[in-house]
Length: 146
Image (cartoon, rainbow, N blue to C red; front, side, top):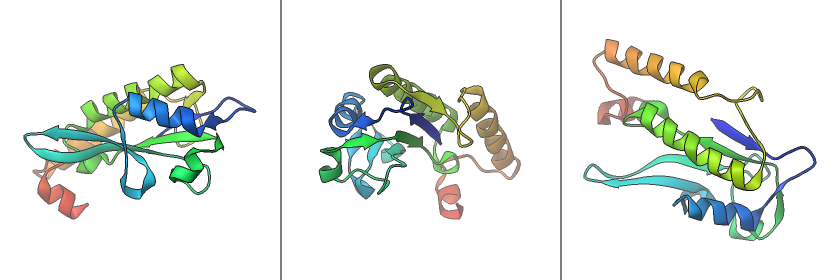
């Protein structure tokens, strides 16, 4: 999870969030949140998603017409994702875009400034651990098990 938090005393406008997400090529859909999709020979899959910690936690169209979103939360499921490091890097770059357009700070789950290396190392450890058991992240059997 990577969280973009609005600057102190500020919030994000729903219309700006909508514009930024569409500019990134994300689609609003399932669970009333935004998704980055992979369209390829392997099929159609959500690779990461964006929701908010502001109640109700997702983006109804009526709430997007309002202002007052405190954050945007970018998340992915590394175990269920093919090439999780590549997907994380794309998610990181996608989170940087609204940061430059809307302002704010990227933080981790503990609220500390986020740096890519803090995520890439655990992702590599997860991939190594799966490999020890003969699995790869994103395989059908791994998606079934997790």
